[in-house]
Image 1 (tube, rainbow, N blue to C red):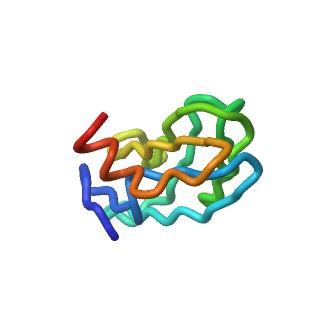
Image 2: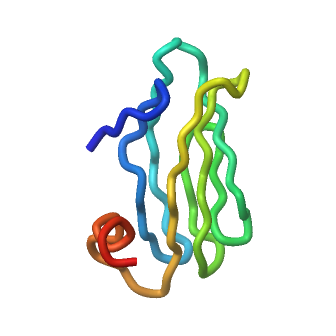
Image 3: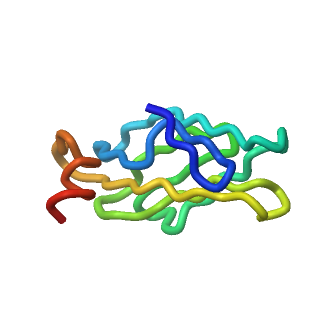
Length: 96
């Protein structure tokens, strides 16, 4: 699923993952600029500048995909748990 937000596209906006698991995120800023990836809490999830996020500890955090000038950005919610949380995006939007 691609969600357009503030002229930024990201493949999904919610994800649950297991401790030690890695996932590749993709994001495209419409201006053609590169993407700067940042984690709000590296002790829960780290993200490299290629968009690969790895669960490093249990908990919840968010990642920021932004243009280098900071003009365009979107948030990506990440839950790292010791079990897979099915439909995390649905639960986050409709239940929690």
